Length: 144
Length: 223
Image (cartoon, rainbow over all chains, first blue to last red; front, top):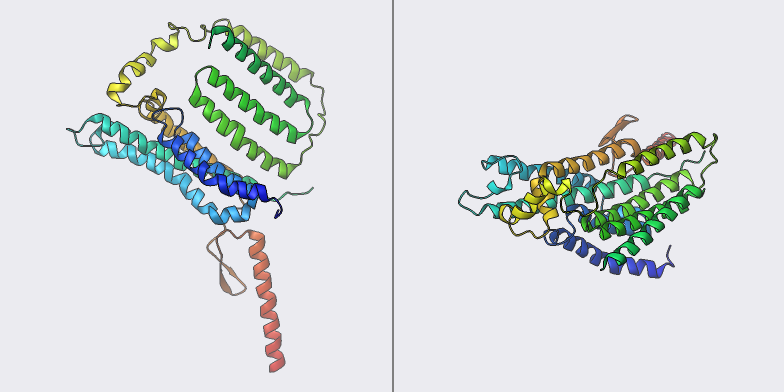
């Protein structure tokens, strides 16, 4: 464990850049390939990498399992929240054109609505992927 | 890229795909099978790129080659790396696979040519998305995003809910079950710390019991 210097240093150096790339994928989804789903997986991959190199215990200190569970639920709530907000604003469920005042340009509402729901997808996918990895990796082998 | 170059890339990728698929079936070493499955996903992602479906390719590379390989490796760590020999002959499965494959190949005869402008898929809503999304959704050059998040917002909401449900299902099946915030044991309440497993909790309580017993014995000795 302790003599794998290249792996440990490499992970530490790469992690912030991978996180940054995930954010790039998230916010550049409007202009190129990418979006919440891919960004969430890349975001979760950082913690999977961390757990593979430094062990599950340390990874769970950085990103506790409870936080991942909460993220998994929070993203769905965020998505639904954007949908209900546009409903209370007078439009249909998930019709983002109504997110702002009626005299506002409806495409602005569309833009922010898409950012909102993509953020919801990111948070859910990130939380679920980390939670799944913890669930699989956290079990000890049962010898029969 | 010229037409022949695209075809060469296609053939190379498809041959790689077939080789990897056969290798996955042939190998008895599950570790190798998992790694080959990851390669299979990566080659499929390459095929999606050739077919201009970059968003799908991105997802395939991240999920198929990345996360699911790690999850499968996590499973192998629990169940072992060797596949046991099948107990029955593979004749019936082979027959089923050949018939299904034959039907699928027969079905491809009816599929319209790839990328044809008057394919049915382009006659429905796709033309509307491409022409009017600039006006309706605003300046989002990647139409895939505006279809996914706005036109088809309900679908994506369902997908997000499915992913959440997957987490709930896996946690119900695989986690040791969350322990209550406190447990009553040996006459008093114990606070349970977050992340403590059932075994650790039981060991902790046994330690305390043993400690209590020695204290009692000391008290007796004093008295």
